[in-house]
Amino acid sequence: MADEDRLRSVDEHLAIVLDGIGSIEPIEVTLLDAQGLLLAENVVTDIPLPSFDNSAMDGYAVRAVDTRSASAEHLVEMPVVGDVLAGATSRAGMGPGLAMRIMTGAPIPAGADAVIPLEDTDRGVARVRIGRPVRTGECVRRTGEDLAAGALALGAGAALGPQQIALLAAIGRDRVVVRPRPRVLVISTGSELVEVGQVPSFGEVTDSNSYLIATAAKDAGADARRIGIVPDDHSKLLDVLENQLLRADVLVTTGGVSMGAFDVVKQALSELGTVEFVQVAMQPGKPQGFGHLGNRVPIFCLPGNPVSALVSFEVFVRPAIRKLLGKRSVQRATVQAIALEGARSPAGRRQYRRGVLHREANGGYSVSFAGGAASHLIASMASANCLVVIDESVTEIVAGSRVTVIPLLLSNR
Ligand code: AMP
Ligand code: MG
Image (cartoon, rainbow, N blue to C red; front, side):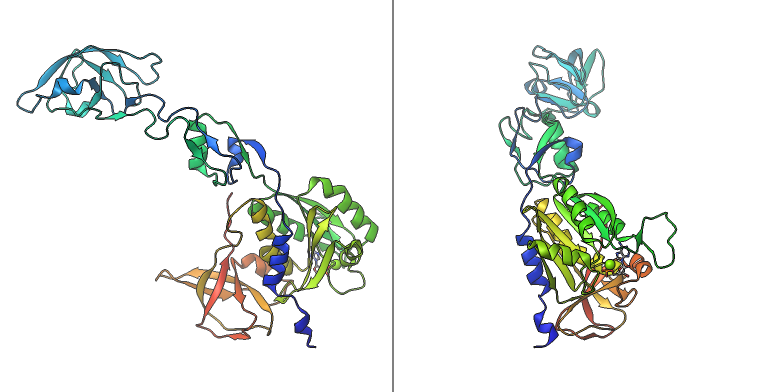
């Protein structure tokens, strides 16, 4: 049997991963913390919007019937019996044949049924002259015309962006029940690793993966934290994982999942029997570990090369985070682009190449490659803004052909 035959496909592994991702208990948060999350309750409003009849314009509150005979040639003149300001807390009243000066947002006085805008009058203070008939209800914002009392303001599953949060504020909800941000804890494994800021000795490598994955997870919507570095040591790894278990909705490790004698993550976690290590038909990112710890917390064990870690995160972990957030679409959007150069790709493996996506004058996209197929190139990874996907069946793409690209857009959440 050829080696490739034993590989699990990317789609199959993703399906297994997503199947192993449950949901997190909804929590109540304050409005500003709800941004970007999904509502987990139906929100019914107690109050109507608007909550009282009010003026849409600065003008004069009148009875429409009193203006019926008004025209440019025959102005109707009325006494102005007072002012109604926005914020007036008691309802003014006025008799027939009279007018009140009113501000935008101020309550319509009892006895009035329309507002004539200032600019359609002589703007008089003691008396006002009106040169056209006013329709009943003109310039009046009706109680409940936006949302009636007792109506559903937002349904469970609604995505809470600025407009939805404004609506919740408007109806007086200062806290809402949402799908929470999953707590993602990130651990770098490797005895060669040192903390950023520490000067590495010969043979030591500064840990960048935990920064990569923690920020990528945060960008995907998670509440992500880096736990730090764990050396290639069986019991130290298991200790750290056990300590973090209660604090995590998802655990992510990098490193130590290859075939080497010191690939401790694979050795230690395989023994538990709840984490599976497989070879996935992709490049980079072939060795993948996924399973659960404490029967509950999903754990991703990603390969240690930085580009492999990024690609593995994008292909498997990001969709899992999106699923936990309750998002309907867990995948990033793709675009089609013209390849500006050719590339080779191994048969039977889905290749993810780093690329630089350009927007052409005609509105289409073109893409060039950044950094070849090697997975240790951190600087070229930093110059990329997309991943180019080369399918399993494709072994070569030629310059000028159309390719599928995943733009790595920042969410600015
Ligand atoms: P591994 O998957 O543990 O065999 O590591 C593969 C390569 O990735 C090695 O060259 C490691 O030094 C490098 N590497 C592993 N973990 C990290 C990390 N956290 N930050 C930067 N490079 C890493
Ligand atoms: Mg290692």
